[in-house]
Amino acid sequence: MLDSAIEWLIVIVAILVLFGSAKKVPELAKNIGRATGEFKRGQMEVEEEIRKAMYSKPAQAQAASSTGIDYVAVAKTMGIETDGKSVDDLKAEIQEKLQHAQ
Image (cartoon, rainbow, N blue to C red; front, side):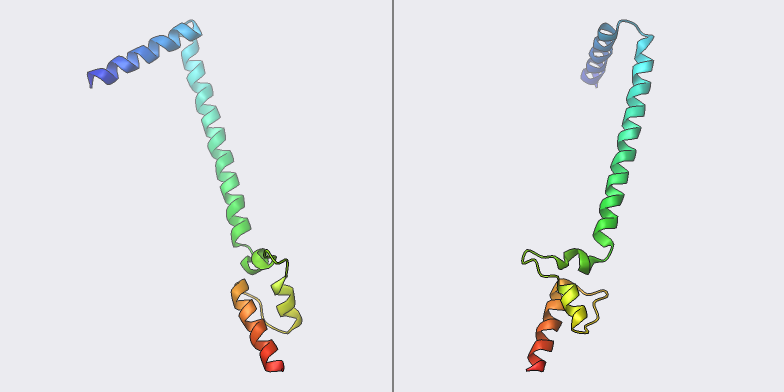
């Protein structure tokens, strides 16, 4: 406990030496608090945008796979309902429909 008190005392003295007087320290702390708040707000906005992008129309977001095939569009042209289905579900239904057509 004594070690941490000494460390804090050293930090305070270093701040006073760097910034010249005790009058500037509260202003510095206030600016750091504002900057931290702005950073957290920006972080929350980015996280919200990511959530929106991930959860809006998941099948369509995943439809353009590495093969470049838009399975949602293919399924729709074949008359297959696409709402709430994953790309794997759509692939299976497309394959099944193609097998039954033969």
